Amino acid sequence: MAKKMTMADIANLSGVGKSTVSRYFNGGYVKDETRAKIQKVIEEYNYTPNAFARLNAKQSNVIGVVVPTLNSKITSRVITSIDRYLREKGYTTLIQNSDHDIDQELQNIQRLIQLNVDGILISSIAITKDHKELLKKAGIPVVVLTQDYEDGISIIYDDYHAGKTIGEYIGKKGHQKVGYIGVYEIDQAVGIERRNGVLDGLKEYGITPVTGKSDYSFIGGQTVTRELLERESDLDAIICATDRLAFGAYKILHEHKKRIPEEVSVAAFGGYDESTLLTPELTTLKFDSYGMGYLGAETILKMITGEPVSKKQIVGYEFIEGGSVRS
Image (cartoon, rainbow, N blue to C red; front, top):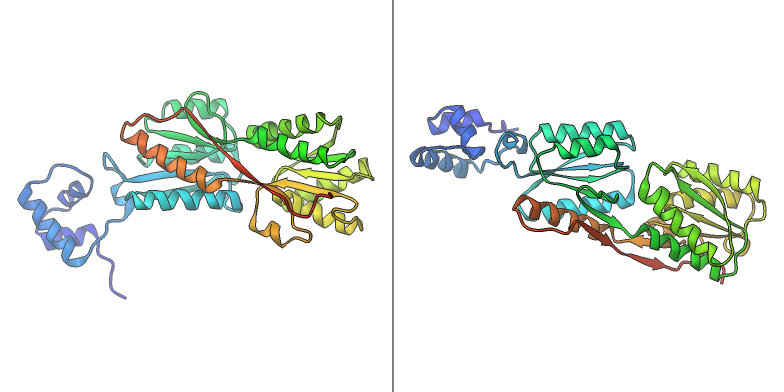
């Protein structure tokens, strides 16, 4: 295997110092004659500099992206859309995973700032006081995704109205004993806004659901479904804050020999491809995650170039009527 060319190799072949090559790639001053020598070697050997070699430049052409998990269809769609858009614009995406840990998320943001990225997109777990202090001192453009960031720029899903849509839908279908599996309130968007929408939608039909809280996992969906059935054995519907929680609900309902949707209806949020493989297919709300990523990438580049951007943008959703809610 051929040895990968380095900046030192470029310097030797150009007959200049390594520091001069570094200045060339980092946008510093280099004489026209010297610049031409370096450019000739680069073209001859088809050399592409490592993105990290540019992180000391005034403009690195690197955008940091902080996400809560890599094990999520929604996050995957958002990252894919961001990366595609930025790549077309000549930028490199540097992804940091927080694994649903607030402290890790703050460390990831700090690390990206230290790496001198041009901007940061944060698909945040929550916006805490520590987040606000850190982002105010960042000194670079920041766009917060999925959480409403009053002190800066944010792009959010319409969680409240999405929740209300599902709550009303279940109410219209004549259900009376409803369970809701939510997530912890530290997640303002899903844990509070989405939940409040569901509760308000059900309330319009005189329904007060039994509720439980979980993390975002398949196991969590199973655990809380068991708990709800212990509290209300004749539930006729379960609404889940995410499709993955609904997968857990399906498993436990099957274990309890409860037929979906004849005995218990199930609805959720996410629109995962896997939801179409369930029997019956899951009734779910699909958020425009690709749109979220596209808007995020477009907005951060506008901020970098000084163009005006909206303080808050809201991404819509699509209702997918499967067969998991009884007619």
